Image 1 (tube, helix red, strand yellow):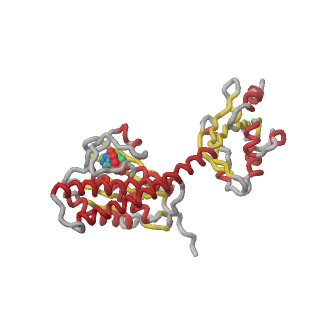
Image 2 (cartoon, helix red, strand yellow):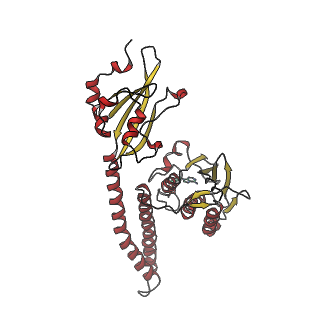
Image 3 (tube, helix red, strand yellow):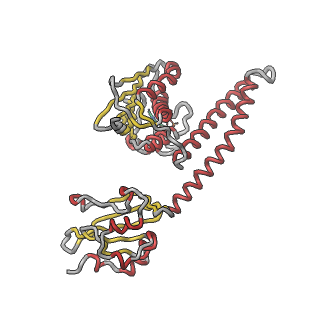
Length: 359
Ligand code: ADP
């Protein structure tokens, strides 16, 4: 019977722009195409029949093993296809790669190895970086004149240019709130582009999430009171610590509580609940507001995405995208659960901070 690799037409594989690697069930190299050899700087003849992990290890001395560009399925998961992004470096160059892998089978359907395809994402990453830089420069340039327009309108409204008619006052108030909205939008765009470009430095420390939760409630209490909305916090006496940036956690919670207030009816209740389970600390912000249609629950975490619910309070559609990026940056997860007309729950989880070694 022919082996799986004999069935692979080498010429076709060599014409592909992705790196291709085939390994047998013991993860020994069966074949690699020209692009793979070029990407990793490998001598292909030398590695046939030898362990694939050793091959990557031999060129990848600086990088921790978990970053090895070789997804190794557990034997019982051998039938799975897998896709992930990996970063590989030989100390001089760094490659950003997408690795797709799937099982190889013989004519009888038996598992005989895996096939890996590596797509070089370096160019996409460079373009992304340039885009983020452009947005950040453009936003900076916009923020300065906007701030001075707002300052001037403030002065006129305060009477610095003499008495103003009721009509002028009305128009100036529109200009003032539009300036506020524009500055908020610019700040949000700047913030998001910085997080996405990996340019924010998180001040990580072991913290209890009750601190940022209390701060966000304190800062939004008066806004909630305007609509007789009550804010409350439920937390166990002792919550495990998380390794997080306290200010950024307050930003995430404030975003979520602000939305909960914004989309709640007068007299509603907004709760922050903290709990711990299975190595995660969980924060739930729940409201009794208009709710979100099921088909929008994932979409709303994207940029400028708004759900079918009525738009109130001049939002930018970026608050959830920023919260998502920040929670992801903390190696956490965030999602929403909701029923239209009954309210929403926004939940995020952060891993419990590892215990400090005893002195
Ligand atoms: P926005 O500034 O528009 O509120 P966000 O990114 O914070 O932007 O939220 C995106 C969209 O998600 C909102 O426009 C709204 O449609 C929906 N949304 C967010 N939070 C809630 C909530 N608590 N209740 C109902 N809808 C919500």
